[in-house]
Amino acid sequence: MKKYKWLIFVIIGIIIGSIVFLLYPRIKLNNKLIKLESEYTPDVRVYNIISDLSKNVKTTNNVDTSKLGKYDVNVKFKYLFITFKKKYVVEVVDREKPVISLVGSEVGIACPGKEYVDEGATASDNYDGDITDKIKVELGDNKLVYRVSDSSGNTNKIERSIEYKDEESPIIELKGNSTIYLYVGNSYSEPGYTANDNCDGDITDKVKVSNDINTSSTGTYKITYSVTDSNGNNASVERTVVVRKRTVYNTYGDGLVYLTFDDGPSERTREILNILDEEGIKATFFVCGANEYTKRAYNSGHTIALHSNTHNYSYIYASSSNFFEDLTAIDNKVYNVIGIHSKYTRFPGGSSNTISRNYSYGIMTYLTGEVENRGYTYFDWNVDSNDAGSDVYNSDNIYANVINHLSHSKTNIVLMHDSGGHTATVKALRNIIRTAKEYGYSFKAIDSSTPVVHHGVNN
Image (cartoon, rainbow, N blue to C red):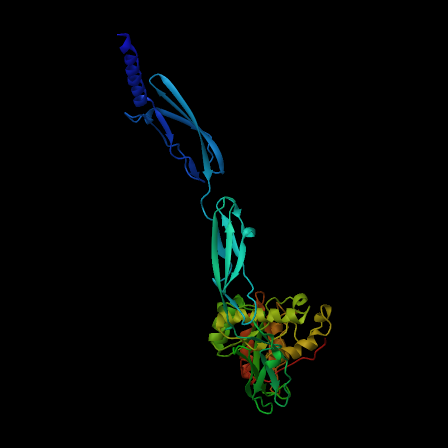
């Protein structure tokens, strides 16, 4: 019996060991590597040979998926009155490649025989942010390779191919105005030009100039400037030269009456247009703005001329550039309403004004010549209604000022105003028209045949 006692103990031990092996729980954490910025829940499985025991597991952790690093996951499990505990180390990792973007085109263009000037690239990483400064550029066969790695060792690359060619035309820039006005008999003086090419640089000396200008005959002529770069790309521009007869100034009279109204449009313009329509005559409006009354006047056959955009003496007469900026502004306003660029203008205060001396000495001497060089014809007046002076509110005096100064032996350019406060002008207008008709006068709007009335320039 003693002989079998040890055998019994061995058998019992084997049985107990087998039971323990079968019942002892095994704990396994499946997700030990965690993607950056992901949602994380520990995936813990507890099991033995017989069954899955995972439903009894509790876990705690300090994982922050917004930061790379190693974190603890604690597992607690109670089974058969025994509490099992285990700690795991998990790691938040970055496996996302940085993003590289080319600045400019995917195909770089370089001049033949010259080095390509790299436009560069940018790089950003989901964790490191801007890593443009870590980009490394390698020159390959007709290409550039941009590589970058983030702090986790993730690498990306992008390529830009390079083509050596020149398909860009040179650029010719004209000095001076694109349209030049000359009088018959004047000589043409070339203001000059420049030409530049993206590959060749300054090629002004290669420009060829051709023209058919005949300053002895009126007409519109073209000057053509053309150039070819070393890679066969061509460019050309044109300058227009208008040769015209010298303006006929008031050395004789046509006996006509040209009613002109400054400073509108306003509600007075509407009232004046009603009277003009009823009396069947045309007039000229030197405008400081443009609206539906301007369009109505133009559509009714009246002449729209330019006066000023600001009518601010201290601004427009401070410099020639200010003056022409102001003139261009009112020109554009008129064009946007009636679709034409008027070439008739009147200086605020007239060409004889002396107030301009306060802002720029001698400016009127320059401007009176330059407006004509730019193709404008300016008109002063020789009949002043004085409706912008002491008689602004006296319709009887306005009437008398006009009628008493009309003459059949001159061209009568009558100065009146249609801005908001000139109700007396409106009141006097119909009587002026009817009386002038009784005296045998005819009315006309300013056009290219109108003899020009100019004052003497005092600055």
